[in-house]
Image 1 (cartoon, rainbow, N blue to C red):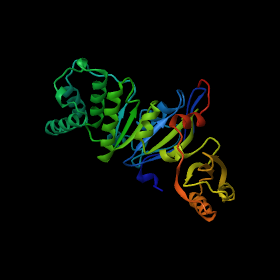
Image 2: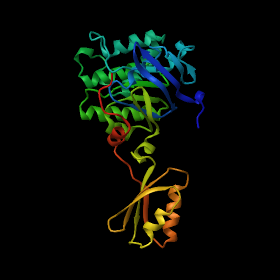
Image 3: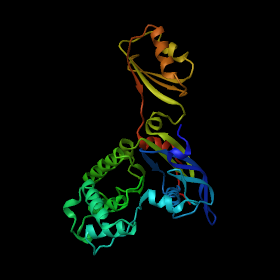
Image 4: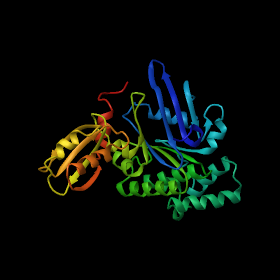
Length: 319
């Protein structure tokens, strides 16, 4: 397991209150470096408050928050140079050209003109906006403005990108192209922390995920682990046999760690829920082989991210 210093993000016991509203209540999670981490939850769950704390725009009232091993309160200026924050609702200088806009922010970070010219050329190529270098911001579509905003947060070469609903308002093609850009950034060594309501895209994009509801973490871990879980608890797997085996059901039921099993397709397929302990899948496999079954396949039974989200969060309006 990664230590807090080696994580891109490490949050421990984070609490934050606005008047009588408890926005965050003991939040704990971490994000490994060079990964894409999804951050999801209903409206009012506390996602924006968490993002503002990570971006050093809001001081944590209780708890410890580290970014790239640095404390967001004690090392604020260093943290700001290691992050790029793209908020959900962003303002742009619409009378500037794309180059002028990026050049302005490069200068704000203290880059020389020669360095700015080099970096801006690179980020425009990465975001496929090189052909719009001299276009006024006001003449760009919503999708192109999103690309320029992403280019802006890359100008100072941050290690961690904090992206709040970056695909909001984009058409399907623009969303797909944005996801490809984010994968390329991960391949370049960036860590990406992305808050989004487009759950289907997060399932395909993210290595890990945190689900937040009513200020508390309901799940944090690998995306595969989330999708293999179940509402009742435990992990689901599916075993397919080459042919029905009379002793298969009894063998599965007697296997340590198995919580439930369902026979499907006239004894050819079994849906199994086990406790997630090490070697549980192997024990099922051994038990079936001992009963004389011929195994065709054994694999995780993945639920859709939408279903996992509904299982872990509560209904009702957040206050």
